[in-house]
View 1 (tube, rainbow, N blue to C red):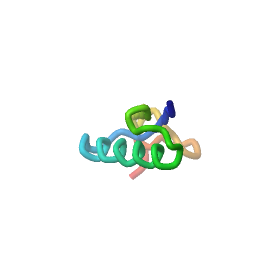
View 2 (cartoon, rainbow, N blue to C red; view 1 turned 90 degrees about the horizontal axis):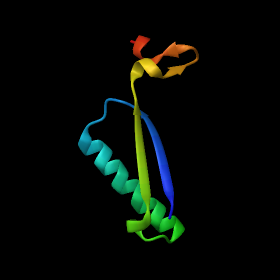
View 3 (cartoon, rainbow, N blue to C red; view 1 turned 90 degrees about the vertical axis):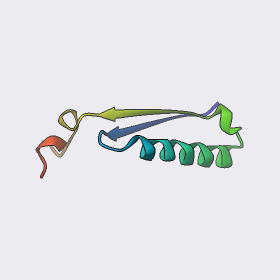
Length: 62
């Protein structure tokens, strides 16, 4: 059973997350031979004030 973890900064619509999960599931099933119903996808959304790049919080960017 493949398990995929996806980390994202918050802000995407429910429809966008749903489409991404469907696409990831299809890609993993195609490339591993695992049945789609056995592919697990975990989506973790991070607040912009809890993620930084180069020492700058995403919430502090313009």
